[in-house]
Length: 92
Image (cartoon, rainbow, N blue to C red; front, top):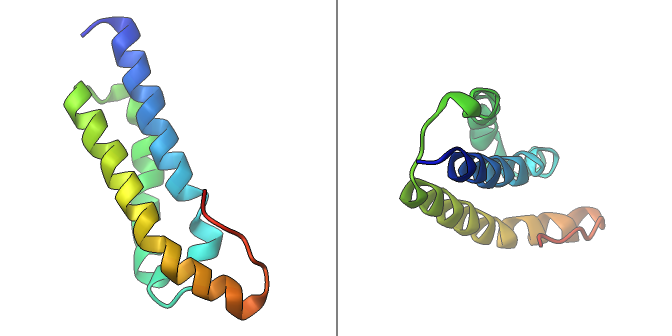
């Protein structure tokens, strides 16, 4: 893997992880969120060590797909939660 390709993979993975981590405050409000919050420490740790991990294009695509699926799964619960407190924030 070339240096440029590796850098691109790391940026894409970091973007996925950062997108998920930005949801932490909202997940704290959800009942199911408490079980997910424990995993955030793992994600944060992985994000800090990301430059030491070698990944392929296939790995990156799987992570991007998993991130997309995760965000889709949260749309309903977060929309319900927004309706309860009136904040009205939407997932992109």
